[in-house]
Image 1 (cartoon, rainbow, N blue to C red):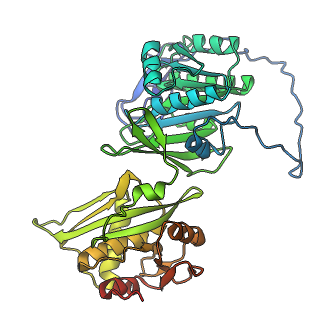
Image 2 (image 1 turned 60 degrees about the vertical axis):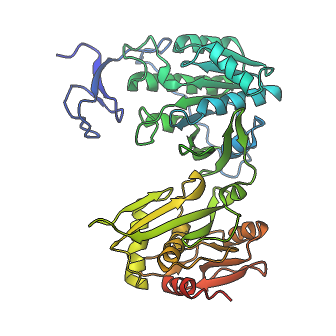
Image 3 (image 1 turned 90 degrees about the vertical axis):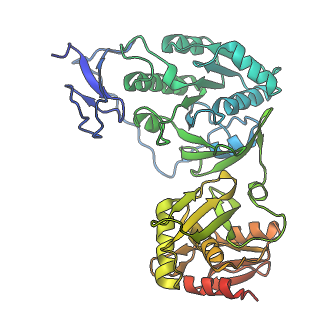
Length: 455
């Protein structure tokens, strides 16, 4: 029989049950329900029968609201993803794979912001103060006036932040914090939820911007209950493929700016260096373009980015052909292969297919369909695309090439980097800077690639 005040929290989805079960009724995971004691937080008011109700004050949509102030950290790529800077009183959750550089990025943000006059604190629950100080010295931030602390007690952190006034506080990480109001261990759903709730309330009441570091699961999602992502004002993810020095900071949620904005960094011995022009970084400009390569003109947030799609179509040595893709959706690749076979007459069902996005960048927008199809057709036909050609467009199941958003921005970025041709939807207009080759159907684009008909 469960003890008084005990509930069972799922460590996978965060749902709370009144009795134990082998399988979580909410998410279906097995052996994830853990007994946890519910306790009232210190300072919480007991329910009262005579509660005074305060009336609501309504305002109209026409009322003017001033734009929220921003703290410029000095790391422009970080400020871009946050919407132009960090908003005082906001809570930001940053997730990423182990070793990708989350702590390095945030220490660099705190150091640069402190050098610009902001009052910053860095609280680590995973490293000692000496380790953080040593990293700061390697990054050239030893002179930055950042207050350091190594603490995991939520009560001690809350009391310390109430005694001193800060503009920006980094907490690394939320999974290491524990509250003495709960008997669950650090990292459990109850502890993570309690720590996030307390820190978000502290950020709003004190007007301090708090950045929380979150661990991720093997699926790439932030560990803990999803309610944390609803509580904070912004959710950022720090991505990077092993073997590549490039790191991508991507915004998944932002109440004070645009989502899907990206910042690009390059990891070096002295920390992370900002990449001002990602398009030039992800492109190979040496020599003629080989068969199986196509340059995609994409949009990441508000920024146009050019990246190279690389494809290889080879005879299969086994009974079942292989399909391997890196940096793109495997389901989208299967759809494009089916359209190429059914609508364009390319026989790919008995051949191995490999597709790679160069530089470790992950592409998610549908406008990359035509670039992937062009790279696959180029490899299958052994016919290289022109060196100065960019490709973009969405492909339907009927083989139609559809228009995409912000075509003018894509073409301007391509022209700025020296490209002179574009293959895409029939509606696009190069404005005289590029010679456009419009395709109504995918078969037309494949025919042009096979015949090298570009003039």
